[in-house]
Length: 140
Ligand code: HEC
Image (cartoon, rainbow, N blue to C red; front, top):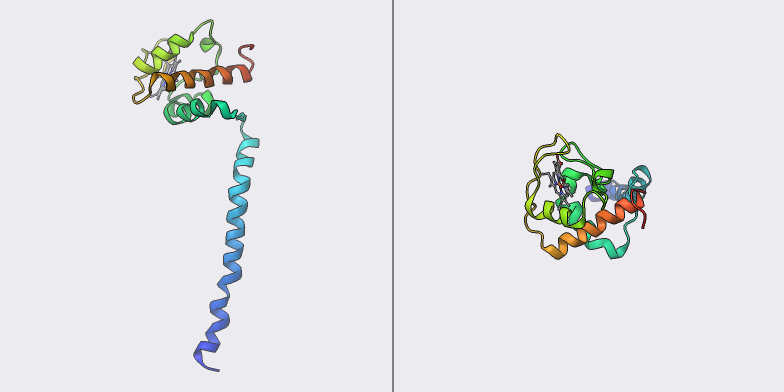
């Protein structure tokens, strides 16, 4: 038996291992979102709100938390303070475009959020209103 024949079985060994690895990867890819979903209270966002959702999660969630649930840097927007009778769409628009001074909470000021167009801000507002509705803060 020459060297090549002796190492052949060894070099073949990684094949099943890599299969296991790719199987695990496939499982992880498919099931992690499901697990993450079932653990949190996150909602299935309708396709039509996709733009507002993405813009919110990219620009606001660092402070206001995923799906507006709040974080250590900013208050939840899914909160009675922010329902339409207390904060109109226009006041949310103003906060996005110009920021706001600390007044309700102790997180400091909210800086203006740059790079958001008004149509995009309106999509974000729709998404926030939808979240508030889903969480039972406002009726539709
Ligand atoms: C850097 C952190 C930060 C980011 C990013 C941020 N906010 Fe805020 N936001 C705050 C803080 C802090 C407050 C609370 C101010 C207070 O009332 O004390 C606030 C308040 C608000 C309010 C209430 C405004 C008011 O008039 O009382 C709204 C609405 C709001 N944010 C929406 C948003 C939206 C939408 C985005 C993304 C486009 C966003 N924020 C991004 C920190 C942030």
